[in-house]
Length: 496
Image 1 (tube, rainbow, N blue to C red):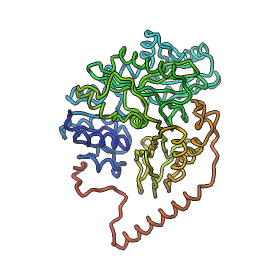
Image 2 (cartoon, one colour):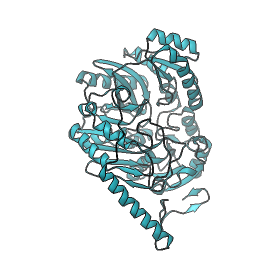
Image 3 (tube, one colour):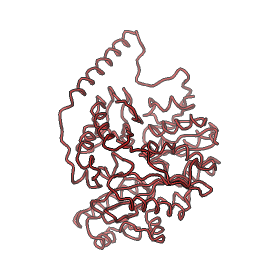
């Protein structure tokens, strides 16, 4: 097993990786931008170093700075988490050149799995149904229009590279195609350094189903329970649950079988998640995410597996703890994501978090980023936290989630908590019949007055904060919004 890992990420995923490393006895080296100096994961790591200013190109995508820290600390592996450099082939290559194990797929696999055209061609060779789409990468708007006409509107425009929701646009008629195509192309070129696109047929009323597969270097494999990720706004997930409701057992078996076939065919080593669109008994393969997913907590709660631990085991050349079995779900789990954004327009919001109240309870898991006094940076994803709830049946979980969301609050900033309360209170979510069009077509957010218990809790938290600030001014107590530890001390730009 590894001795020391550099975590090339931030926030809740860095915290999550540190938790596993503590169990495995692996020392942790954290990196942070100047905007993230106060985040909690820095105090949990054995070492922490500032790698640049806020913008990602200066910090979390600054490969030179990250590699300099890794060498200085004598790290023997790098865990990229998700986002940033997690699917960057060049970063995996540089890690290998510097004799650092990359906790994930290697350069060649990342290049293959990150190309939607290539992985769909591979799927077709295995007689796996693929979402109807252009068969070649497209960079010319007229060529894109012709492809859209063949597929018939509505269509989806996506970058060929990458496996995230950036740059995805739906087009309902030819009139809006050129504008959407050019906008997607510009965004893809800036974010992914690739201006080629793929045109897909929009499968309306479909569910977005994902299956995670683990495969070690000896070819031993474990296929995990499917996840329903259909609750999305602008193609970004805001909730996830396992097992997926309202799909048949034959469909459930099909997505698992197809995922195993693809993993073997693609010679997967590590962890990857295979995505599908499901409408009735029709299943269409979409793409592969060769990394830990944001919603992995639901899988861990129903299986008892530590997926980050399995990643470390695979990269160290050790066998999976469990493999070759048809692993079953133990109950149900649902994840809810909390964002700093307008609950109606989904516009990202920044500001200073004054007070926070995190509701607790049995079988409730929180993964947090924000804390009292934190100023939300403009440079990163605006997620504040993830809350995952486990239970024996999904209706009891939804009931608990609804009550927890009534008590959950951040004062001083705007969040999507009011939206989440209404989402989990809707008939479609409670009945499990929601699909990818739920937020776009079947749901209307209603602005309401804050709940009375929310008002009272916010007043109490504000009063306590003001009291502490007044005491701090008088010198009676030390009050700071920056997490500190008695065993850390600042040395230059690093914290040791």
